Amino acid sequence: MTRILFLLSRFLDGGIDAVLLDYLRQLAQRPDYRITLAIGLRMGSLEVFRRQIPPQVRVVYLVDKPWLTRLRRQKVRHRLPFYQKMYDEMALSPIRRYLIGHKLRRLASLHDVVVDFDCCHHAYLRQVTTWKVAWFHFSFKQLMQQHRRHTQRIGHHLSRYDRIVTISQAMLDEGRELFPWLEGRWRLIYNAKDEQLLHSRAQQPVDDARIQAPYLLAVERLEESQKDLSTLIRAYSLLRTQYHRQEKLYLLGKGRDEQRLRHLAQELHVADDVVFLGFTANPYPWIAHARLMVHSAKFEGLPTVLIESLVMGKLIVATDCPTGPREILDQGRAGLLTPVGDAPALAEAMHRLLTDTTLQDSILAHACQHKSRFLFQQVGRQFDEVIHPTTPRS
Image 1 (cartoon, rainbow, N blue to C red):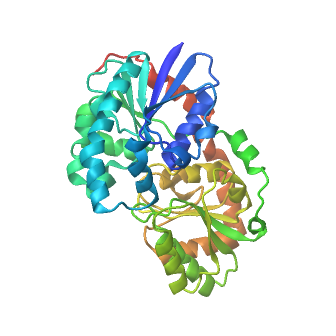
Image 2 (cartoon, rainbow, N blue to C red; image 1 turned 120 degrees about the vertical axis):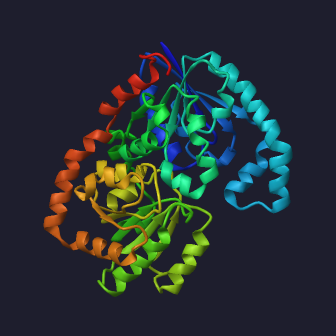
Image 3 (tube, rainbow, N blue to C red; image 1 turned 180 degrees about the horizontal axis):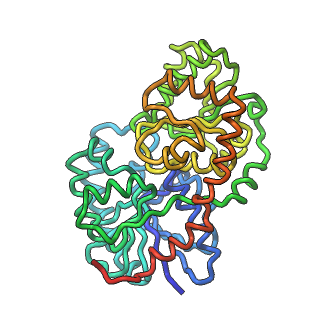
């Protein structure tokens, strides 16, 4: 029996949370694994996936007092006033850090392996001797461009782990280039999906007549710091005016920049055709009914929605951002890729894939072969190797 402790700073509705949930579903079925999920902060009603955690998984909160998490919960919904932000950082953060460190060290001693799934716990794991695995979800180089001083410390933080998992080959190559002293610890594991479960959830009924209309679909967080839905809306405007397409554009997700994106749709005179559906814990019926999946971002790790769309046999257009889309779409053979921020190119690609039946057949046939690397049958074996200390620590 292998006792595995997964760590996650917060359990919300993002891509990392959804990927972890997929792993928990699969691993909970293994009789040779005993799984514990330690969540840093209890986020209450914001934990939209909480009920989907398998009952075999033990869930522990490291900080669960409402007075210690209230401002962090409010921060997810909207930006905090300066004085509240300072109070949270100066007065409450030290208390949270103490509680997390104390509980985490005790929990780690009771397990055979610790998987830091969002790489946020390195400071607490310095004194932990249990086998440690870091799971990294973003481009190293992109983070370095945005937060150079922070990223320069990433190599030092990662040296505390026995294995470092990246979720794309491009990300792995970046890590080896930037942190050569960590050679021997790197592993590549793609985010995997359960094909049968996806199709089963896609068949669940949706009480919303809009799902029957012809539409294009983007499933993304509405935050422009990483995503690039403004380019998508501009491309959709061109799709309507230049290519005379009639499908609506549905945006499935929530985020701080929703009003900004709504204003952009109004400025471009497509407000009636860009539909903000909000968040749903089950996007798969919407994916199944979409004529085309579109993904626009400035950078990624390995966007889960593209993998899900690929596995479900959908036509896909995505911006060729670092990292992930190019690998998921196999260099453009399993879906079309366009330059980041290029609205005319994105509009042209959407029109082409909607109208060229020969291209559609070619892409779907290639996607059917390519999807196997993102299924759990292959990834499960790789996970087994990562969590078992087969070689001495470097």
